Image (tube, rainbow, N blue to C red; front, side):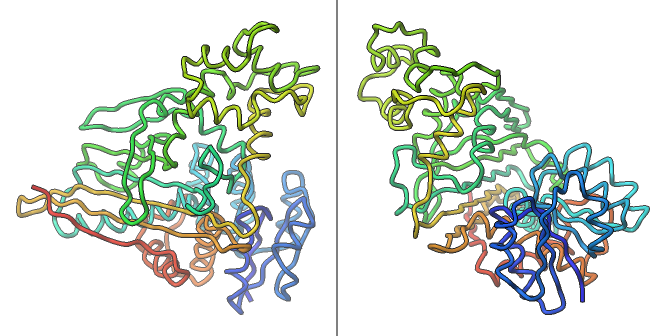
Amino acid sequence: MKHVLVLGAGRVAGPCVHYLLREPEIRVTVADLDGANVDHVLRGHPRGTGLVRNVASDLPSLLAETKPDVLINLLPAAMMAPVAAACVEAGIHYVNPSYIKDDMRALDKKAREKDLLLLCELGLDPGIDHMSAAKTIHEIHRSGGRVRSFHSWCGALPAREADDNPFGYKLSWAPSGLIGASKREARVLQDGQVVVWPDGETFRKASLIDIEGCGWFEQYANADSLPYIELYDMAEVRTVYRGTLRFPGWSETICAMQDLHLFDLDERDFRGLSFAGLTRQLIGAGADEDLERALQAFLGIKPFSAVFMKLRWLGLLDERPLPLERGCLRDIVSFLYAEKLVFAPGERDLVVMEHRYVVDCPDGSAVERRSTLVDYGIPDGETSIARTTGIPPAIGALLILRGAVSARGVQAPVLPEVYEPALALLEKEGVRFREREYRLG
């Protein structure tokens, strides 16, 4: 009997744990601060054990007590490297769905010395995107082709029938993550030149894109695309662009919220303020001014502007008191998002991912290859974002337990010994890409 320790019993833990417990040779321990969440994830399974623990302060003793063969870390990003370091010390293989940062890379040498695999970036994005892209790029290179350009987009959204609020968005992950992405720097490679859009400027460069069979979306560049040149082994590439998908109108609204400084982190005193009073402060409107007109003038928009109507719907003009006395403006936005951008019972979420490759072929011709993933959540069941984020690390742990991965050290899932079986197993779960090719010129 093999043993997997899962840290964290949040949104993605259920699909991860349930996938592992389908294997009769695996038992699973789930540790989290919230006992109710642990119970919800395990559902009384006979090979599941729940522990209510503060992992941050109790990790060495937890590892010594449970003695797992593999640890899956589903905790917030700040806990990735500390938990991985403890696993290296304890001689335990490690899997997580979060990005590899410098503090994680620093563990590579010691992990190799101890014959351990730290398999990271194994979720949806990052994760499934890596595996699909690496598979296709390796195929292109084996056929003698060269990747001229690579574009990749991913979006986690409400299904079209659940798109019933003015923002065109509902939360399938934490509000703090959505808000943090609203000020993120973006870097892309365009025709051999590095282009940088700092501090959320990427939203001012948004455009529309048609995903065949799924409709029109708005897209904007997301974070730093440049590391993928080396990660995907495409030194020849001239354009690399990784972006996010939203329903049209999102970027214009985010730009207005940026102009209001609603994503600032500076601590403020909110005592005695309503939402409307805070908005007056932010735009410098006097107590006797018509707030709606003042806000329109500040943003340079018309009364019939969709952006204005969205901000009013969100609650920025409400006379009700603010929910806290001190904090930052992001806390206020997080409260409103959590209140307004919620899924109703029975609604489905939607995950859309598409890669586009322009390929120069050995015969001098050029083609565009497209790989598209469209996946829906289960009404009143697991969301798509939870399944596509939680199942990949479970598959990674399963491959390690079966001795199917020989690589050691800190790795992303761009190795054939990882992505080939992992993508095949994901297809069995209904998570599959549709592949198309178009001749250019």
